[in-house]
Amino acid sequence: MAWLQLASYAGGGAFLANALPHLVSGAMGRSFQSPFAKPPGEGLSSSTVNVVWGFLNLVVGYLLVWHVGDFALRNAADAVALGAGIFLMSAVCARHFGRFNGGNAPDRP
Image 1 (spheres, rainbow, N blue to C red):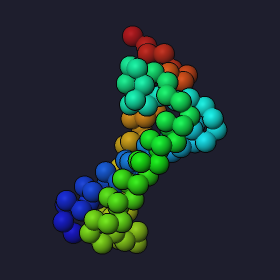
Image 2: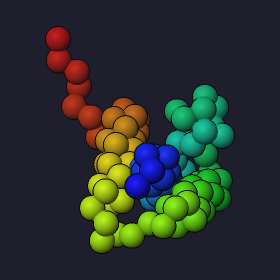
Image 3: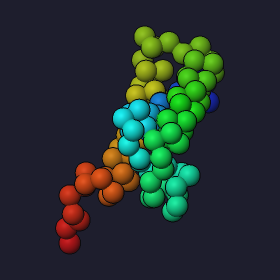
Protein backbone atom coordinates (compact mmCIF):
# COMPACT_ATOMS: atom_id res chain seq x y z
CA MET A 1 0.00 0.00 0.00
CA ALA A 2 1.40 3.36 -0.97
CA TRP A 3 1.98 5.79 1.89
CA LEU A 4 0.25 8.51 -0.14
CA GLN A 5 -3.00 6.54 -0.07
CA LEU A 6 -2.71 6.05 3.69
CA ALA A 7 -2.11 9.79 4.11
CA SER A 8 -5.22 10.42 2.01
CA TYR A 9 -7.27 8.12 4.26
CA ALA A 10 -5.98 9.87 7.39
CA GLY A 11 -6.81 13.25 5.85
CA GLY A 12 -10.22 11.97 4.84
CA GLY A 13 -10.83 10.82 8.41
CA ALA A 14 -9.89 14.29 9.64
CA PHE A 15 -12.37 15.93 7.27
CA LEU A 16 -15.10 13.45 8.23
CA ALA A 17 -14.51 14.10 11.94
CA ASN A 18 -14.57 17.87 11.36
CA ALA A 19 -17.89 17.59 9.52
CA LEU A 20 -19.70 16.27 12.59
CA PRO A 21 -19.70 19.27 14.97
CA HIS A 22 -20.57 21.67 12.16
CA LEU A 23 -23.39 19.56 10.74
CA VAL A 24 -24.87 18.77 14.15
CA SER A 25 -24.69 22.35 15.42
CA GLY A 26 -26.12 23.69 12.19
CA ALA A 27 -28.92 21.12 12.05
CA MET A 28 -29.82 22.01 15.65
CA GLY A 29 -30.07 25.68 14.62
CA ARG A 30 -27.11 26.69 16.80
CA SER A 31 -24.24 28.95 15.88
CA PHE A 32 -20.77 27.49 16.15
CA GLN A 33 -17.18 28.45 15.44
CA SER A 34 -16.06 28.19 11.82
CA PRO A 35 -13.24 29.49 9.62
CA PHE A 36 -15.64 32.12 8.23
CA ALA A 37 -16.35 33.83 11.56
CA LYS A 38 -14.53 36.88 12.88
CA PRO A 39 -12.00 36.09 14.22
CA PRO A 40 -11.70 32.90 12.15
CA GLY A 41 -12.14 29.73 14.19
CA GLU A 42 -13.11 31.66 17.31
CA GLY A 43 -16.16 33.74 16.49
CA LEU A 44 -19.56 32.21 15.85
CA SER A 45 -21.03 31.51 12.42
CA SER A 46 -24.71 31.01 11.69
CA SER A 47 -26.29 27.58 11.65
CA THR A 48 -26.63 27.79 7.86
CA VAL A 49 -22.92 28.52 7.40
CA ASN A 50 -22.12 25.55 9.64
CA VAL A 51 -24.35 23.19 7.67
CA VAL A 52 -22.67 24.25 4.42
CA TRP A 53 -19.17 24.00 5.95
CA GLY A 54 -19.94 20.61 7.50
CA PHE A 55 -21.33 19.28 4.23
CA LEU A 56 -18.24 20.45 2.33
CA ASN A 57 -16.05 18.65 4.89
CA LEU A 58 -18.17 15.53 4.38
CA VAL A 59 -17.72 15.70 0.60
CA VAL A 60 -13.94 16.20 0.83
CA GLY A 61 -13.64 13.37 3.36
CA TYR A 62 -15.65 11.08 1.11
CA LEU A 63 -13.49 11.91 -1.90
CA LEU A 64 -10.23 11.37 0.00
CA VAL A 65 -11.32 8.02 1.42
CA TRP A 66 -13.35 6.37 -1.33
CA HIS A 67 -11.86 7.89 -4.48
CA VAL A 68 -8.13 7.62 -3.75
CA GLY A 69 -6.67 4.17 -4.07
CA ASP A 70 -8.75 1.15 -3.19
CA PHE A 71 -9.93 1.75 0.40
CA ALA A 72 -10.99 -1.42 2.22
CA LEU A 73 -12.27 -1.18 5.77
CA ARG A 74 -11.19 -4.79 6.37
CA ASN A 75 -7.60 -3.87 5.50
CA ALA A 76 -5.93 -3.06 8.83
CA ALA A 77 -3.61 -0.39 7.41
CA ASP A 78 -6.51 1.43 5.72
CA ALA A 79 -8.69 1.25 8.85
CA VAL A 80 -5.86 2.43 11.13
CA ALA A 81 -5.08 5.37 8.84
CA LEU A 82 -8.74 6.42 8.72
CA GLY A 83 -9.14 5.95 12.48
CA ALA A 84 -5.95 7.91 13.20
CA GLY A 85 -7.24 10.84 11.13
CA ILE A 86 -10.60 10.75 12.92
CA PHE A 87 -8.96 10.49 16.36
CA LEU A 88 -6.38 13.23 15.79
CA MET A 89 -8.88 15.72 14.34
CA SER A 90 -11.35 14.95 17.13
CA ALA A 91 -8.65 15.57 19.75
CA VAL A 92 -7.63 18.85 18.09
CA CYS A 93 -11.28 19.97 17.87
CA ALA A 94 -11.89 19.02 21.51
CA ARG A 95 -8.96 21.17 22.63
CA HIS A 96 -9.79 24.09 20.36
CA PHE A 97 -13.57 24.23 20.69
CA GLY A 98 -13.46 23.27 24.37
CA ARG A 99 -11.93 26.67 25.10
CA PHE A 100 -15.12 28.33 23.89
CA ASN A 101 -17.75 25.79 24.91
CA GLY A 102 -16.66 24.83 28.42
CA GLY A 103 -15.08 21.49 27.52
CA ASN A 104 -11.59 22.11 28.88
CA ALA A 105 -10.63 22.26 32.52
CA PRO A 106 -8.65 25.38 33.43
CA ASP A 107 -4.92 25.07 32.90
CA ARG A 108 -2.94 24.40 36.03
CA PRO A 109 0.48 25.94 36.72
